[in-house]
Amino acid sequence: MSAFNSGKVLLKVSLQTLHELEQKKDAAWELAKTIPELPHWPIGTWDEQVGTWAQQTGTWDDRKRNDKIQLEIKVLSKSGTDIRDRGGYIDALRSHLNGFVTSDKQLVATGPSKRINERFFTKVLTPEQLADELGV
View: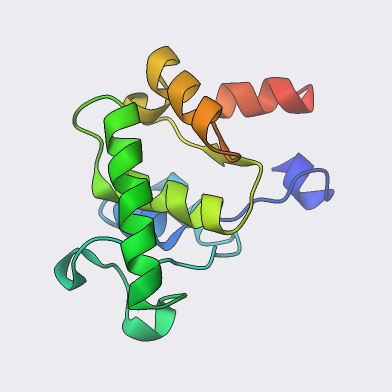
């Protein structure tokens, strides 16, 4: 967090991640609540959305484009990738962030992260890889 607090790195949290962490309400959730939120881009059906319509960025036409991307990520990642994890990645991608930090093995295992990172600008990183990038 010192890299974030010093301005060395910009951190944002997705509404998808907050929704997932809210189920446990542990230290990770408390920390995530202190980080600015990413714009939330709709994917999937209305029943698969998190948050309210007012929290959505974009239109249902954007949702169609986002769905194509999230289905491509589903193919590039390991089976079992949750729509919440793919949605968080799309929020980072559509916000033009350089990286998406996750410990979800379906996204950050060697094969999936290599395939995703070759295809998209926003790189999938583990917390450890981010620390290495920052020289921490």
